[in-house]
Image 1 (cartoon, rainbow, N blue to C red):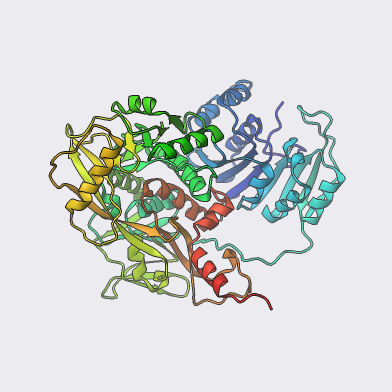
Image 2 (cartoon, rainbow, N blue to C red; image 1 turned 45 degrees about the horizontal axis):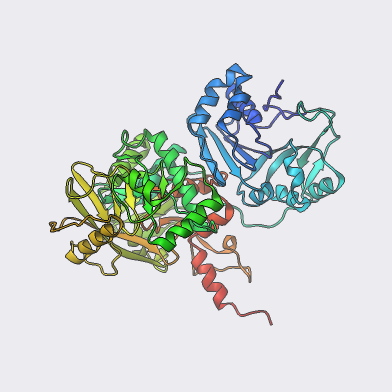
Length: 606
């Protein structure tokens, strides 16, 4: 019989009842049996917490077959198994957030080395379950991390505990009760040890700001702002959306088609890891919204990314041999296979992303805003010009000083227009011109997947294909022939034998908001005038404007950045576990530039 996770494995009642949120960390997800049992117990408890976060460590992703075997033994789990399978991610490393039960149950799978993943968790954990052998392979020092993650009155159930590990946990603040002779079915020789978190001393740290008054103002109704509104409303916030145009998605998000796909690299650098998390999270978010091609315009037709040249193709082949990505995530195809897939000769081999594709951003923005119900108040045609900070709230005013909205939280999602506010004027953001060329069907090869490389080509929609996009350093807002010629020449390079011929000047100009390091700015804005009491400051030590946040710098990847960035920010606002690793959240923290500047200007110790 599987233990009922409404109690611990020792029979102690979990203290989740009548809580708004509860966080459980499981070191041994295995085939999901403990997770299904926890889900069942949570669902059956009339006094369950409003939201249950289940954080699960696992060295590699369980297969759907293993999940099915676990669920098959319990008929009452079949519906849960089906819901989980529909959201199960590809078997790639990293953190994967899965929403279940109308987003009241949040499963975060953390795939990779357990000790390394543990150090990347940002959460306050109420219950630790260490009931398998995996944790015993960790360095003993890694157990000290549990104390940093523990919420007040957290409890710990652990088996296979030896003296060195017990001492480490005691030093981390855990007080052990008498060991319980409660044998696990799979490990009949292991005894469960129980502890509660009761540290003798509490380390001084910067407390996370959690907003009890859940009212926010979002400035900007493009992809960034629309996603923020949708995620905030889903978490019970009331939102005022301010947009200077008469409708959403009128600037960079107004293009007829945008591509969504991940970025690959041999060293799996932070940019690649972030793009992988953002891409997979976006796919899940869009399914919950109603689906591509149903709730909004677009298609999951796949994306074929062609190598630049022979040398680049050889490097990508080596990358494919090294990482061996699962086929549902990424496949390397040689030139012949890529040409067959494209239904036209292509210049070289390429990566095929079968779940990727294209989306019309404006329709996606509208779908996200439509999902917000009456908790969203829109202010279209209003220009946010001034930010005034009161005692505990912000007032947004127009150019004439007239109040548009007031709330404790303001989120800047208005791209480079954010630089007009003094609080954000030092952010290293630039507007990069991008011109897209539109071509009528029949003047370009009919392709099934999106084709990209040095340029991109989308399948036809409403009789038109999109080609682009230029990267220009000027600020001209009208179409230019040289930008169109460049788009078509780059496309011709990856489609041997095709020539554009004489085409009318047609398309659209937009301006990407790009940070100096090409990563987004997600989180609390730094206050450069504020005092920092720590000489060698870290990100958490830097002063911030209270209640002022940014979702900026999405560059050419707003489609995939928007859902994950909004989820990360809302998790920070609500004090919930982070959906991504701590080092990745730090890589997109808006204060990273101020920290680098301070470190450059700080003299070394004498």
